[in-house]
Length: 189
Image (cartoon, rainbow, N blue to C red; front, side):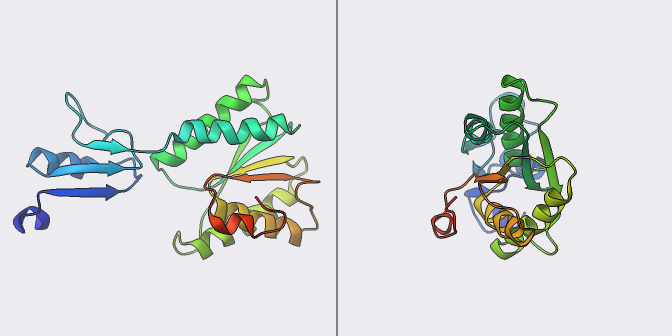
């Protein structure tokens, strides 16, 4: 209402939340929308309500899992923050598809945790540390982990080190981002 009342004609939305019915309504009222990180607005019927720009997150999850499997991992896990976003769902879908293709669907698992406050870089790294403690305590722990993003992966690596586990000798870790900081950790992601 505010945007339309101020004469705004178009917006770029950066949201991967699955529930976006409010955007559908805004487009029906004349707002032009470019939706980043989402394939379609849920509830769309005929013509898409927005132009969509997104990364192929299914393929990203698939590629990451395939890399671990090609490296010899047999018990893979996907480490992520809990919550329902389209990009997260798609990355997990690709990860699980790769495990099924390798005949390892029953060994693959998704490990979720909650950030304590928000989802900034520091909180995601802390989430990785928390998930590393859970993984280290598992009776049969994974030998390879795909992290939802590089900050979770960096925290995961730090947490595994704190638990006296070596990366990649004990557990291989891969992140999905390729942020510059990933090259500065040891070993590099």
